[in-house]
Structures are given as structure tokens and as C-alpha cells.
Image: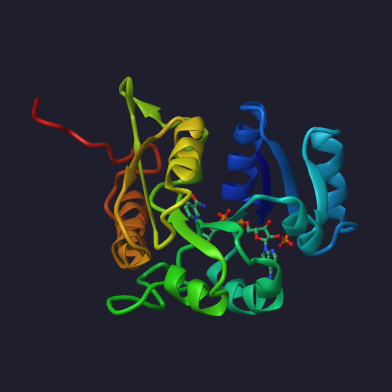
Length: 212
Ligand SMILES: NC(=O)c1ccc[n+]([C@@H]2O[C@H](COP(=O)([O-])OP(=O)(O)OC[C@H]3O[C@@H](n4cnc5c(N)ncnc54)[C@H](OP(=O)(O)O)[C@@H]3O)[C@@H](O)[C@H]2O)c1
């Protein structure tokens, strides 16, 4: 599968490297291919992961992961929406306030629904937002898989997204329509505040317990 990452930072960088190891063809889509940061990234990655302009990486991709700061999202999606028709876009962003005290949007909409409205023909999924990138690096804790939720209004590609989640090492859980992002974005804040405010640190995750 051809997968583009817009955002090569903590989340994009971690997931891209893991999906490459799983045999996917992976591209980074970056603002400035010739920035010092991206030239160094290219040296680090060798020929494993291509670095392209954002548009080139989208054109080549079947699936796009969005892993930028929320503050960049609106302008970015507006500028690429015409290239997103029928592309699966996995929105990993969280519409966080700068001081992490809360969310910029919520209750009656979500960051993912805002993206869907800006790119109506795109197949937007919300996922990979409810735990830290360090957990994405290795989602197995106490010999059990951490949970990764996903939601979307698309019906055709749910098993594809579930498989990508499982390729990273998570248990996947389908939580319905894209409006469930209204639950997943505050859930991310619960992880963040538990990590930084309530003393848990970053090395914990959520999992599902089932009565047999
Ligand atoms: N960190 C976590 O543990 C975590 C976990 C779950 C979800 N998230 C969410 O995932 C998103 C990314 O977080 P992160 O920690 O990976 O951030 P990060 O390490 O700061 O990386 C952000 C990436 O976005 C790129 N970027 C910034 N503005 C852009 C724009 N206008 N157009 C295209 N690319 C742009 C940056 O590229 P440049 O080099 O060009 O600046 C960089 O590669 C955030 O929304 C965050 O809330 C984070």
C-alpha cells in the first residue's frame, strides 16, 4: 500500500518508520524538501522513505496520514482538498489549545469533522490520536495490546484502516461515524493530562478488558 505522511515529527515519523518495516511504500509530504531538517531526514532514512512535496506525496498515495499541529490544519486542508478526492485520510491531529488546557473545538463538532467539511470528497478517518507517539512505537504493555480507536463516515475501507492499526501493534476498535471524533479528541486530552498533570508520565496506555 502507498502511504503518505503529512508531518514527519513525533507521530508521523514514528508511524511511517513502523509501516515501512511492515512492507508498505511510505512517503513524507513536506513543506520544504530542501530545508536543513529534511535534508538531514533524507540522510537518516536513505532510500527507505521518500521525501516529496506535499502534493506529490498525496498524488502517489492511497492513504494519507495527517500528523501536523492543529494550528496548521485548516489552511493546509484548504490548499490540498482538490487532491483528496476518494483518498483515505487518517487524521491523527488533536485540536489542542496551545497550553494543553483544553480543546479548541468540541461537543457539537470535532477537528475531524471540520477537515471533512473542508474536503467533502475525502474519506476522513480519525485515529492514532488517543495515545502518545512513544506508545505508538511499542503498543504492547504488560504483555497486552493497547487500544486504538477509529471512526469514519466511509463504509468501504474500515477493514483497511483496522489492518493498518494492527500493523502498528494495537488492537483496533471501530467506534462508528466520524462524529465519534467528538469523543476521541477529549479522550486524547485525558491521556495528555493524565501524563503531564496527574502524575502518570508518558509510559501508560488504555486497553480493553472483556468479561469472558
Ligand atoms: N506527540 C504525540 O505524542 C501525539 C500523539 C497523538 C496525536 N498527536 C497529534 O499529532 C499531531 C502532530 O504531533 P507531533 O507531536 O508529531 O508534532 P511534531 O513533532 O511537532 O511534528 C509536526 C509535523 O508537522 C509538520 N508541519 C507543521 N506545520 C505544517 C504545515 N503547515 N504544513 C505541513 N506540515 C506541517 C512539521 O514539519 P516542519 O518540519 O515543516 O515544521 C512536522 O513534521 C498534533 O496535532 C498532535 O496533537 C500527538
